[in-house]
Length: 209
Image (cartoon, rainbow, N blue to C red; front, side, top):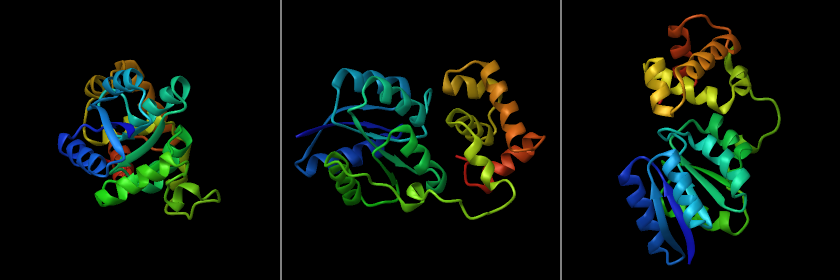
């Protein structure tokens, strides 16, 4: 049995994925978590073969969590299961150390198959994540997304929800000053000057959560 930890802040999704994995007779779910810090604790305690990970997590994003795992536990395979924009986040997940990226819209059977493939040593990514050439233009600001750090993308998503700096800081467990610095860099990198434009950018590029 291949040990697995499921990380998602939606209990119904954790339950569905757990049921599908354990019904296959291949996987044993040894832990669950609904936020980033809790996930790190469970993963480091259980040392599973596989982590099925959402990216949109409270307190510590999935991308940042993978960065820490890559340093402390590089042998653990990570399969990202996300509702976030594939064309943006699949490539970021690959760079962060994930072994695969799957949309939450996929059938449970596809998730089980992807988990099997990842543990067999295969990479499971959409072609958009593996395409190394220039992306087709889709607006003057489209290429700016690549210049953003994972932290900046996460802060952008929370700001696009309408959260204040303080609320973003509390959600991600970072200081108000860090949020403010990220916001300033976002405005500079995206070459925009107002929060309204920032929110419009996030929505136009399907980054708003």
